Amino acid sequence: MKKLIVLSSMVMLLLSGCAYQVKISDPKQMAHMSQQAQDSIKSFKYYRFPLINLNDKQKLMAREQWHAYENWMLEDMHKRFEFTTKDTSIANVKVAIIQPKHIQPGNENTIGFHLHGGGFMMGTPYERAAMLMANEYGYPIFSVDYSLSPEVKYPVAINESLEVYKALTRQFPDKKIVSSSISAGGQILQSMLLKAQSENLRMPDANVLFTPALDLNFAGNDSYYFNDGRDVIALKNSADKLFKNLYLPEDVNVNDPLVSPVFADYKGNFPPTILSTGTRDLFLSISVRTFWKLKEGGINTELLVGEGGWHAYQYYPGIPEAIAARKAVYQFLDKHLKSL
Image 1 (tube, helix red, strand yellow):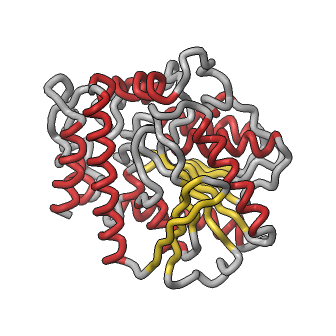
Image 2: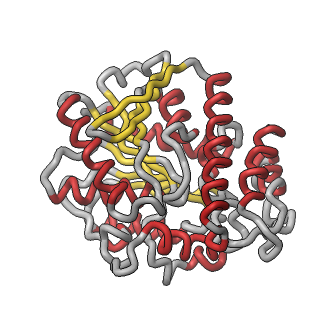
């Protein structure tokens, strides 16, 4: 745990300065949170400034540092689980295959399709959320190494991911498919699924969204303001500028449902979807709004809100609240996969 805190702090300090302080809550606020969760929150007590202020060289350094952190996560996962990985190419897009040693009974005909997070400009397919799901739920995951911004802009990553998804549905026509994502990967995944549905493609059998960034407009999201500074990972001043300046073209309509899927009208065979967020998550309101849009459209959906959970807290392997969130996700998957 100590090494994890040091490495994560090293990454975040690269994105830090002296203009913004993480707000550490009164102990009464954290009275019902696990000690592990409290310790994690306290470990992020330092000053930060928006990532958007970094120059191009510093942004590339930030990416390299984050990728080094994810390489450490990969090593840590290998200490916890026995699994293999393979780098391949599908539809001319790099993909990592995460293969657990043991397939959970009933999952012999199930595969996963995963899109990592990282603010559209960072991240690798060997993300801890994907590795935890593959090993804990016991099924192989195809994790897409989509092109990053600012080298490419919207909708390149979405189109790349869609081509991989199409190829997988052709290669495994009889397999059950679980789509999953975290943070910025949620925007790419949800937009991709809306496009897949519009093209009458086969849809996944279940869809998992961890702290998804589904509204790139950001206006009108309550938690985007009251959780600014309480979320130890996501930062408002970075998110609203970082996503728009680096990921989106200047002339894009941020209220377009393919840009901000919270504005989509969900209907028909859109897959059963579970959203997981936390009370400290900057994107809590986005998950809540998307849940209601899905529900209004008649889509089978669940919303998980973890007490004290910050952005992407679900991929911490040893925090009780994160373990509980993942367990609830697996129960949702059981419900929708085992009956098929």
